[in-house]
Amino acid sequence: MKACVFSDSHGVTKNMIAAVELEKPDVCFFLGDGERDIARLQDKYPAMPVYAVRGNCDFRSDLKKLLIFNVEGVIIFATHGHLSNVKYEEDLRTLTYQAKEAGADIALFGHTHYQYLSENDGVTLLNPGTIGYGYYCSYAVLNIENGEFSVDLKGI
Image (cartoon, rainbow, N blue to C red; front, side, top):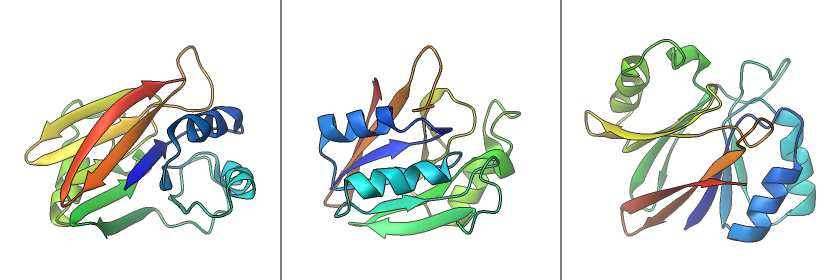
């Protein structure tokens, strides 16, 4: 399974559409701050599932604050990050603890607008950066097969 991981589009959908055109993913994960943009993405690609969480700028949202799911034997923890102190903890200990408690192999988060990929206490932490605006718009590609995963950080 190939997934595009996006966060923080803040009203800009053209970069997500460009990434989907380029990558041809099976699914997308959206990590908040641009809930309305998801509808535009789904209008363009109705057959492609998009799993999304609520961000701190997604006012009056019905989206969940976090998702935990198993994809081909890989446990994914997805959250925006604002409730996990990701802007304030260099070691991302709260996020790591939450993901470990959920039994996750990988924690997907956004909020900071900066790409980040590391392994912390047995959990891979992945922030795709902001797909929306700034001097460097970015996303991640997550490939999962037979209980193993790999990540590529990309810019657009």
